[in-house]
Image (cartoon, rainbow, N blue to C red; front, side):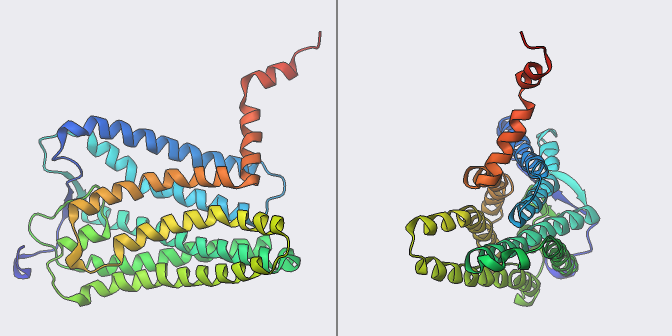
Length: 325
């Protein structure tokens, strides 16, 4: 690693991506393209399904925002990765400007942070619905949902701006080659010519705000929900109430689990190639799983999706429009 005295503010970076595996690039391109299109289609289908519901419960409004976040989340990373996979294999990497790298990282963190806050808001919705069902309609109003949605976005934006400014004020070493397919935080910190733990404090602060605090709120909400479920005498009512939480819990474990494993650790433990492989999973596979989880576990979403798909069935409109024999 170069000494800090030999570093300058970089004009840009090189994203190595998967250029060292030219034989895998065609297969990886087709695989990522398939997953990407499926993810976009799944989230778009949920948006259309929610829009087709005449009266939308608050949970569906939160789910709609979650689909929007996942839709944008994949667009921040995957299209450029697909374009880089079509580049000639003899190059060292794909160039990205200093500003372009900062914008990509900021948007990635902002959307991920907004999702952290949104999952906490969805846990509050489940808490009120199960622990205070008679007050649910009066407490969780469309106005409250809109304010919570706006707060989630603004919170993620504020944290991402602070973290981006802190990271891009660090000195970077040597060739500015990022062993990654996008401008991820760990790859940039690994490239920074610093050994002080003080430089990791902005990331730790962001993890505190985006991961620890919302996760504690979610745990407290589900602790109260578990206590309420234990007090229910009807096993059928207990199962029905618990079933409304399973999809949210599954998505929460996926999102917080991946984020915690990737970012809550010291710089000395960073492994660029391993982090790149793990990032390939959480930027492509987990967004693909979210629509599947909600469409399989949420009865309202399942019904709405069936209604939308029924309208798109080609034979249905023809049969209804022709004369009767």
